[in-house]
Amino acid sequence: MTEVLRYAAFTDAGRGGNPAGVVLDAGHLDDAGMLAIAAEVGYSETAFVIGATGPDHLTVRYFSPRAEVAFCGHATIAAAVALAERSAPGDVVLDTRAGLVAVRTANEAGGMVATLTSVPTRTRPAPDDVLDAALHALWWDRGDLDPQYPPHVAYAGNDHLLVPIRSRATLAALDYDLAALGAVMADAGWTTVHAFWAQTPTTFHARDPFPPGGVVEDPATGAAAAAFGGYLRDLSLVDVPGRVTVLQGADMGRPSRLLVDLDAGSTTVRVTGAAGPILGA
Image (tube, rainbow, N blue to C red; front, side, top):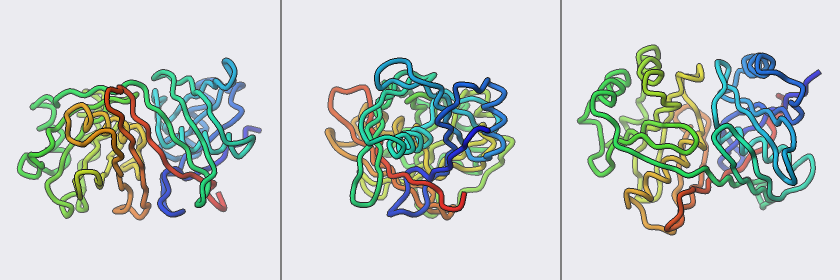
């Protein structure tokens, strides 16, 4: 019988976070088996550790309840913490469909914390017609956008549409046409829409609709946070080196905290979060 662990990643002071399934011994599973487990678990993502490819190198694959995805940040944090609890904190390199992702785990005062280093990020302006279609599905318009931050499509293993929102109230009231947004995202190849509001130049509130994964909203999205960090750095929208805090999930009752570290001259981004087992799961 396959053991499926359930962890919450990117928790905030031990609360909230994004649930992820973790299978630490998945070498015997085929694609259909992994997809079936992910669908049964029902979380936005489940991470499957296939096996070792070298010293401190592990192959990991990620499945939503509907399909495989190349990379998932919160499931990476969850899997790394689960591995560290089985053995010991330290460094590991995960071989994902998006590329190699280095992860470091450590015990801190509040519990186990993991830091992933993304694949190289990139960003480009969002095409006007596709942006307008997405805004229409989100029941927003151009007047809802913050002119300080240009809408972009950013990548850190997956593509994410970045939508800057002018007010916290508008972000908090997020509601949208699931089928329409899902169709736009499928055509564009986006994994999530990362809608964000700038509380300060380094603290952002975010919400991430995730129709491609069969989930209305993701409470903490590490891959989107990495892509967002690369966007901020590459467009000189934040001072580097520096740290950005992304607060996500509060509006859906699962407060999450993602710490995004940016270095000058780097093409990668580091994302840190706490994780722990979901009690009673």
